[in-house]
Length: 399
Image (cartoon, rainbow, N blue to C red):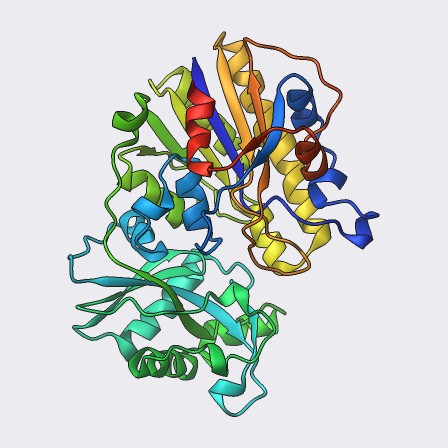
């Protein structure tokens, strides 16, 4: 038996008036997911433990079977694993987003955060900007590392795990009250704006009508993680397909393979087909028993507040990832179980994550059922199936 999880990050949502009171998942044309649902099982699962922040870090750990209350040590340390940073026990890592702040205000504290991703800036442009930041700010105590797109890393030698606000939680708001309490971190963020605001790359971006990447934003502090091996935990040789450093880092920590897909970028226009093919090859040709295919686009479109693009991201996932994986495994004669789900909701109305339960779809090629339901939040809730602890979902998949 082969096992696949297709994770649509932030795919779950709330009813939207613009969609006639439907959610994006309910409104989107998803014939593949609906067909799998009718031949399988749908239900609701609670991925975020009570009292924990509803982040992609805690949620994806949970889906992979790692109880966040046991294994979570912060978001950015997982990303550090992906980037290849060998953290010392005394190091604290912080996510360093390159964000877009409003420019008309004189005081840094009065600016508003307009875009947590600087228009999904390319890694190539972001790396040049981060190099300028490094020249102006890096010391023996604070070291910057390039990640992917807008997502980068700061390592603080003998640092403290301080309370910091995720930028996507305060979109459109004045930043003063959300800046770090630590004077050095706050000062570095202010200085980064001075370095980046008139950088040639940002001058060109504005000429093209693109959001300037004009400030660093620190968040997600944590210490070196210690995950147990996924294979030892489940007996399955696993692989990860993701463009996001967080998921790659979880895979490194869990001793899973990371499958690199050219053109995979974590955005709406990622290489969907390449991700699907990587999963098929891993399961049919490369000796893997389990593949986790992570799609970031629904979450990004939720943060952007774009109903149309979130629907498109879900439809892309259905037609360009789920369909070819199902077909590829069937053609190879493989028996398989596929789990489709979000990690958490990213409601358009909020433009950030919530800890609400999410709908799951479980299909078994050897146990075809016959139901009338479709895969969406409303019908999954009506199904009566419910899993209270997300970290038990992996056992439900592979039992």
